[in-house]
Image (cartoon, rainbow, N blue to C red; front, top):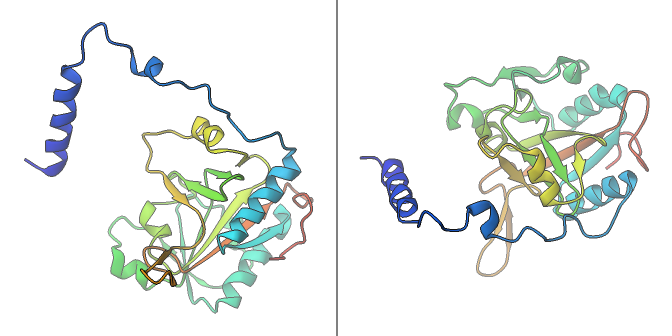
Length: 227
């Protein structure tokens, strides 16, 4: 019996002991908490997202959809990346301005192969302004969870405003809990007993977030390619 089967068995036995007339789970916990703290315009939510991402030491860039290929090419060039990992459903136009060798997201690629890749470019499922958090759900333009955890440089593209929400409760309403969700708040980091911060422990050492507005327009208050 595997560890997974053992745990699921314990859960099933615990649930079997619940009285038939007990309060249903959906009603057992109060859900009357605030869904967001205050009210924000779209521009204010995007600005708060950018502020909190930067506070977590992510590098934030803003551009229009038409400028995105040049911004990504510039980020890869500044990193001197020789290879970039590409999820199977990523928009090919995003990498149209770069000649960096593309590496496919293959199921058989393990940590060793992924560690040899310089950068990875993904989209996201949703971005949370109040916490500065990006959520990936393993969609075709995001790829497997491991590709955002092993390479040392992650470029994540957020579509503004449709993928930006103010709060965690709002984000949860958009997400499928059965999917492999990865919650990212800044580059990977930890602190030792002396509170010395170390980055790149269990994920990318460098996280770059590109906030992309609609065709021909920039996100509110943005400067194309600015950080």
